[in-house]
Length: 145
Ligand code: ZN
Image 1 (spheres, rainbow, N blue to C red):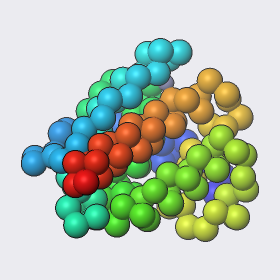
Image 2 (cartoon, rainbow, N blue to C red):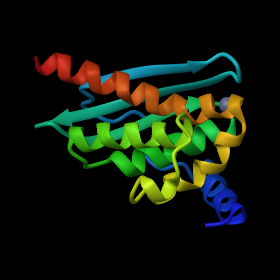
Image 3 (cartoon, rainbow, N blue to C red):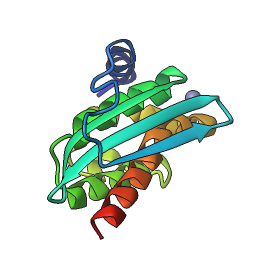
Image 4 (cartoon, protein in one colour):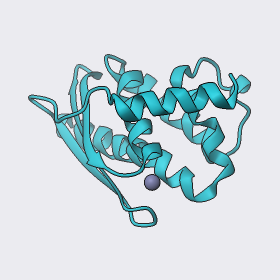
């Protein structure tokens, strides 16, 4: 994929966010705040039988944080929790650890965020909803015990 295509994917998610809004019957919620940019995101999750049955987000912030949240909800909806955790760590590998996308397997629209890693300040924007998701998963699992 080239930069132009990446930009189009991000813009599309920013303009037409997927899974926007809190989910009904959420088993966990988590809040993320990025003071550097002013991004705020709330992630709500419905985890049942170790599967993310439903996920949604609310919030406001820059196009990167909101596009990342929208892509995230699409990628994790309906996935088993261990797979979601795997995806979080691959995404962190891509953005924070600078791994090559080709080493990380199928990333879907997530790959569109690859360009963000050139801008250190923006990496926090892109990671924000994922960190909130991670907190939400922890909270959901603690509830189950
Ligand atoms: Zn931001």
